[in-house]
Image 1 (cartoon, rainbow, N blue to C red):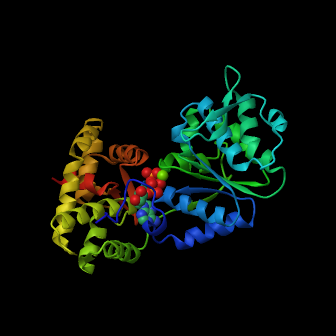
Image 2 (tube, rainbow, N blue to C red):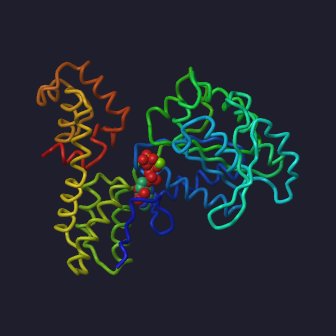
Image 3 (cartoon, rainbow, N blue to C red):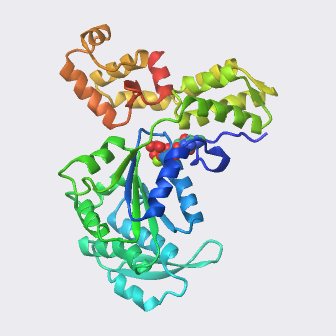
Length: 374
Ligand SMILES: Nc1ncnc2c1ncn2[C@@H]1O[C@H](COP(=O)(O)OP(=O)(O)OP(=O)(O)O)[C@@H](O)[C@H]1O
Ligand SMILES: [Mg+2]
């Protein structure tokens, strides 16, 4: 039987659950007019999946969308080529007058290319030696120009925090902020997995994007929804899981969507290999133990890169989550003075190894927490 869980791709369709309110809210914002949104949240809570679903909703409502994952374009040249290509392919009107393109994009050279299945497509590459602010502005203005004042479009930048490496001294952010300010027909969604870095881009008053977008924080789904999802997924593949086992599955990995899919996948696999139709808490425990072992290597490598105070803090949090690092807590885990703990905490949060969850500091990856406990 095909495994009904999937943690490797964005969740869509019946793989996707909950997020109804935020999805509706986002849809209505983008349908009602020009607005920019930054979507934050700890890693693996489902930001990219949610936006992929939203893009489907918007396209259905007749609003074309363009998505660019900035991690995949690590240089400014790659950024402008990829962005111009995607924007052109999605937003150029059917009867687009090709000569206009020369007016919109002086610094890029169009190129006809043959796709793997024989289809032809237009793509772009920089024509000059270096891409500077002018060429970047031109490319960023392309969606607004192609719409020529009619209709709307939505542009999604995933892993947006990575743009800071594309030009020095916040150069990219400055150029982009001033370009998109005048885009009356285009709305933007910014998201990314470096939660704290992304948040600073939009909340630090020295940064170009300060207060330029509505901020939405994506938390965890309600536990009940997650439990329901687990039960339904097993049922869809002809297996039954008792409610207490489903609750155990969700609880063990702190109700984080990515880990629900991962632990669900492994639990299903074990039960299926044993040709069992009903799934128990013992299966969940075995699957959890397996997954904690699978990543051992990676966790050991990670530990080698951390300072002693960071390691101590992680081990403490794996044993006991806390809302503050008072005297008693610091003494119990021999963490040292509070300034040491604070700087270790800041670094670990910046790198996404710990998160605040329901007001408490926790190790972000529940399998890493298990590794730290043993
Ligand atoms: N609403 C959802 N329903 C079901 N599964 C989900 C949902 N959201 C996320 N997932 C699962 O979690 C995985 C990670 O989700 P996604 O990549 O969307 O998270 P993210 O917040 O963008 O993560 P990152 O911070 O690493 O970029 C998905 O591949 C999917 O398996
Ligand atoms: Mg993501």
